[in-house]
Image (cartoon, rainbow, N blue to C red; front, side, top):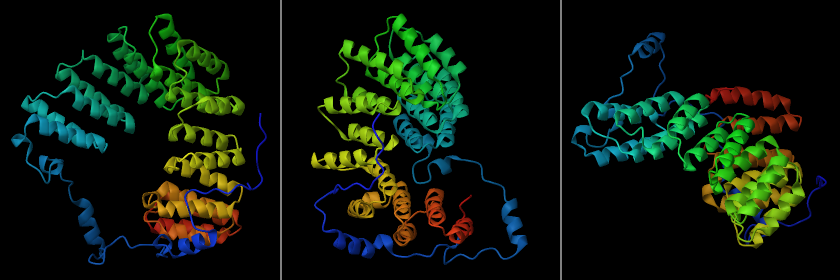
Length: 424
């Protein structure tokens, strides 16, 4: 096991051909990101006035909610009855991409009433939305629509249903669909594995049982099968099973896959075997941003701050720019070692990359980093310059006040947060 680094790193991190630090600091201070804004905003626009009488409030609350109608689903387009099926499919898929399942189901009900068939691709997009939102009840309604359309025997949709039920935590329904569609194909098995991992529960034994059954039945596992298995082993810190799987990958000639290299690095780091993880990383020839992100996150997870920052510098020297995931990984590391200058360089890179400067997770990480570096002034400027302040931003600021001994300001933040309508 490698020793944990706690001292401030002496390395210089140059994210781009950036100007000297003094210029960066002045540039940061003058950037529109840090323009001070009021900590509270009125919930009413300038042209609106809040209700002043209780009677008015009561009348508003007693108004009946308008039921969802065709006009609500398509306010700026042709009505459903004047559209061809392909256009309606695109509308359903658009709602699915936005995770608006109730609207998508309303259209599916309409199509069922009109006798318009729905294609498997459209059902697939809606089932994917159920996986993202963990919406089991909506998933069951979609399963009913699949039966109505006579697509229950479609292998592609059965695989999606297995994935959906396992991801939503309904293992019994998933097993029933899986048993009905049993075949020698690896795809339903992959759906079962992947869904069990996504469900978020500690289902290591279920994954191991499915994995063992696949091998006993002679199912040919592919890259995605092993990726799900390794992710489960990483979450359970099952080093022994991970080593056996690594050996099997070498035997089957799959170890050169970039996806599996990343999974192995993640698994070894989460099992505390940093030397093995580093060896897999160094053996990787084509290192993309995902591989770099895995190794940087692994060092951070094991509290090896210096190694994490060194690999960020190494990545930049190879011409790969940090993305939002890596930025949210290294900013807490910088805060832990109180490397203020380094944090300002990273902040300058965020400001220069305009799309990152608007992302709330990065703003929250910057606030937390400045607070840990004992610079509450810059932390407040980032906070008040944020376009959107959610509970995570407020928590970062309150934690900063508390860690710097300003408990009165931390308590005031709770009041200000409630005034902005954010629940504590």
